[in-house]
Image (cartoon, rainbow, N blue to C red; front, side):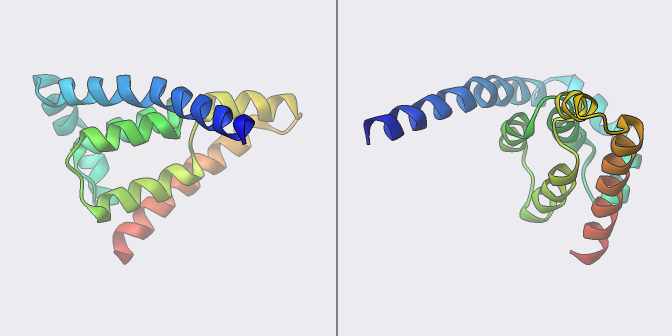
Length: 133
């Protein structure tokens, strides 16, 4: 039981090391002109997914860092259930791309094709979820 408790605490601390700084960063950015600029710039592209422009931060963090960074970003923004579901669907397919691409490369799988497939299917799932929800 002690080993399980220690593993649980260690996992919690690892997740908090990512989520808390990202949450704080997104909260700060939310009250600066930067988020407004990013939101306006990406709004046309994010409209295909039925998402506000600011949701691009969630996609960038989730695809570039990991899913936990995306969770921290989501909690720092004011998104509804529909938007969170669309983002979750997209990130389920294409998360942690740099790290997972390195692992895939080590397994001698064609990286470019798989990366294109993951990002492409993520985009298709976002558009599909937007139409269905």
